[in-house]
Length: 150
Image (cartoon, rainbow, N blue to C red):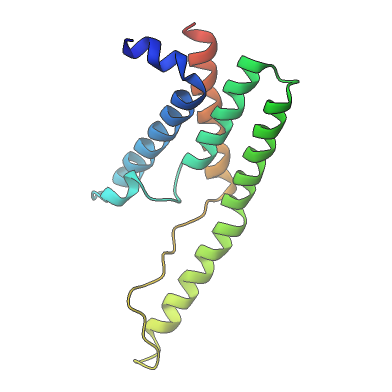
């Protein structure tokens, strides 16, 4: 089986995975352009522009919608899953990141009264714009491969 056959045989996994890889790559490049320094953690890390979580789940829902029908039960499940993931990314995880930032500052200025082995991770969530950008990216990749290349 060639790469092309493999890609389309397992399209419900390969296309969303590709959307995640593209989003992570863009996140790395955008961070490089803005900060003008390489941060290899951006290739696998969470948070930042665009949301790779949103790209993955919207791509998955779109691929299933196109392949199985937008009225199918499995599309409904994946769409609901996508909404929960994106809400979590822009809501709960973003709030946790803000709390981590405050705690890190508190511990940094506590003059040794408190001790952490390492700082809490602050960049774990997304702004709504980052989530929307990831969703649009995932939608575009899914449509391109499901409609444009078939």
